[in-house]
Amino acid sequence: MNSELKHPLGSNPGMDEDVFEQFAEQLTRYVRERLIPAEPEVIENDRIPDEIVDEMREMGLFGLSVPEEYGGAGLNMTQYARIVNIMAYAAPAYRSIFSINVGMFASALKNGATEAQRAEWYPKLVEGKIACFGLTEPGSGSDSAAMATTATPDPDGNGWVLNGTKRYITNAPHADVALIMARTEKEALPKNAHVSAFLVPMDTPGISTGSPDKKMGQSASHISDIMLDDVKVPGDALLGGETGKGFRFAMQSLDNGRISVGAAATGYARRALDSAVRYANERKAFGEPIARFQLIQAMLADSEIEIYAAEAMMADVTARADRGENILVKAAAFKVFASEMCGRVVDRVVQVYGGAGYLAEYDAERFYRDARIYRIYEGTTQILQLQIAKHMLREWEAANS
Ligand SMILES: Cc1cc2nc3c(=O)[nH]c(=O)nc-3n(C[C@H](O)[C@H](O)[C@H](O)COP(=O)(O)OP(=O)(O)OC[C@H]3O[C@@H](n4cnc5c(N)ncnc54)[C@H](O)[C@@H]3O)c2cc1C
Image (tube, rainbow, N blue to C red; front, top):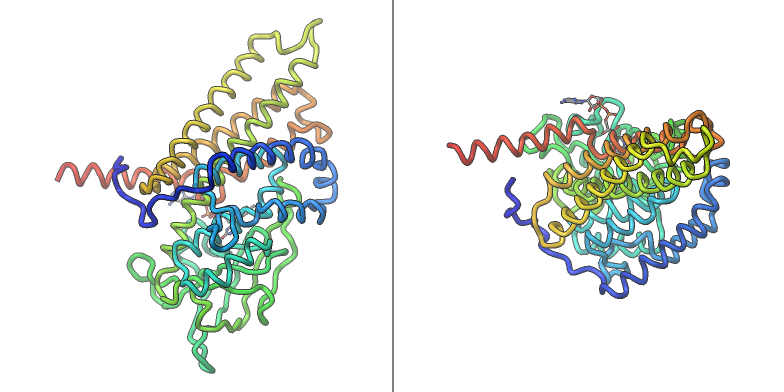
């Protein structure tokens, strides 16, 4: 695959390495000493306590990828993925609450916003306002460009009127702002230029959210519909001030989102495996710890091997991103491998736990449920396989014509 292609944004030096290492160490301790002990309460109440969300704000987690000149931590991709990976050792809801801020929303601002939009929204992200990203709809998910939500010129001014419904939107019930993808042309255009992106405060009249959906896993991370009913936004809500660029911005932001999901799946697999190693040493059968049985050891070893592979992919793809390479294919490959790998690891972890693995009282059961979504959002495995193959075949054709 051609890794010589340069990313339009170029390289990013990131935070000073020593300062970053101290931050990573502090966060690792916070995850172990504060977030993991609070998990039973978070899961029981389906809610992260406000004081923890405030602590996370104070630690700067909501503005990790916001450039330093706007008050953020200015992390590069390598550092960003490591922080997500560290956070993902705890229950997924903790990452979820700030993931859109630092992932897709910050990335869309970086890729596509005007200076005025950056000046307005970056500081709000840093402060801890919660963002959401509205792409999926009842009738369009993988085929997201087939969206029905429209933005039409406001007859009363220079703004836009938005109508439609967005579905499964992470953080929608708590969000202060949404990045909404909408059609600015009726007919589909080449390169999906019929789609534009809008920065929409969630208190704009005409916006409402549905009740949070009941899900398989990841308690305390909430998704819901967003209904847009004649929502009037000013002209400067159009991301980048230009129509027809929304889809490109969304796809560029998804690169970042895929790295985040890959890093999260890798961190969660590590958490699940550590718990299986502990259980295997504690649980006895036939008079000895089950960790002594070689078939148990095989499951532990296979998991270790696969997590190591995902960690190596994470280090590689993020280093490439920081060198300014185009990482479209490799970010997709990392996301597919890490999410599928996490699925295999949590499945083995349930097996290591035996009957206890099936009971809600033990962690293995929720690891298994929580991990399932990683293979679906930010591009399903199938859609990313198609994307990877498309690039491979295009390169083969270019080289052989
Ligand atoms: C917990 C959760 C959080 C989410 N958060 C957000 C969010 O914040 N913002 C947002 O916009 N969306 C969000 N989503 C939506 C998510 O991104 C979509 O669900 C996902 O992209 C899949 O779309 P779909 O559900 O419409 O599935 P479909 O597109 O209907 O796909 C169904 C199946 O068909 C397969 N398929 C589809 N097309 C093809 C093809 N051409 N070839 C082969 N197989 C194909 C898919 O891989 C899948 O297996 C979230 C979803 C969940 C469950």
